[in-house]
Image (cartoon, rainbow, N blue to C red; front, side, top):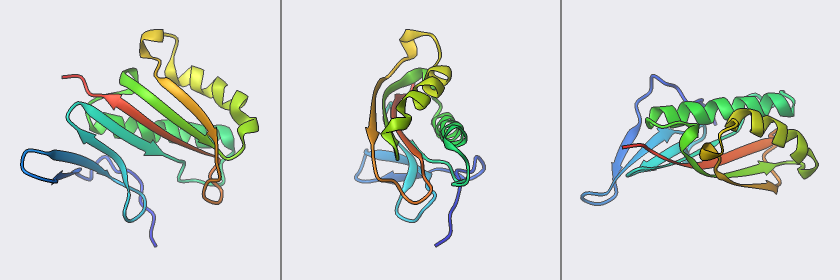
Length: 138
């Protein structure tokens, strides 16, 4: 099974589930999955680091960068996050993640989404997985 990264040059797929119900999808890194989906003014995106040899800070930075790329393709950005779910392979690393999160999300409380941080069993080598919902400005 080959792995892919989100590529800014690859077009997104538009799927019409039924007449008048268009869903845009960003290519995923594994068959059967998308890195992001959009319907109307809502965007869903998920990211992990493609490089599993990175330490936690490296994987967090890579996941944040991937989230930003996916949101950008859907014409929005992290200022419009509504919700975030963070999955850590070791919940003891939450304080370390919180430091990175605060730096990434910024100082403006108008841009802070609701956030949950969950300890989870992730795929081998994955230390963090981030799933977000964002609004798309009209």
